[in-house]
Length: 110
Ligand code: FES
Image (cartoon, rainbow, N blue to C red; front, top):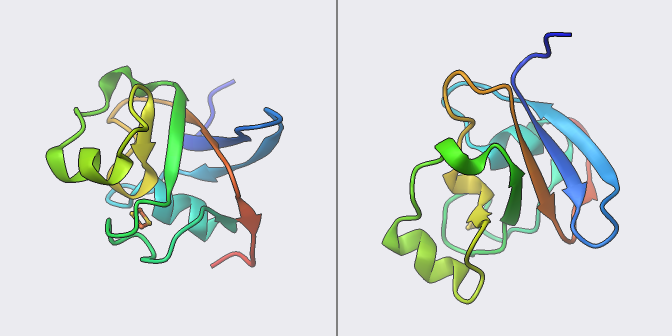
């Protein structure tokens, strides 16, 4: 089955599937998840200031561009597969990114 490009979000503690969001060209993972009502922790709403939108990339992260210094500073001790959702986009030609996060809440579809 061919699926539309998307983000799949899992709970970092339980591994439970929280939902998925269509990948929209030009929008970050944070924006796409937010549009789908999957609210990552944030105080800056996707402006790469707060550093709270951390996600662990479980699958599909090989084609992501490397972490830049400003993102690394906000990630702090979280390294390895952890990224800021507001700084990553589904790489072209890729079907999905599987992400894990803590503290996700659900809101109305934006
Ligand atoms: S939403 Fe604040 S740094 Fe990503």
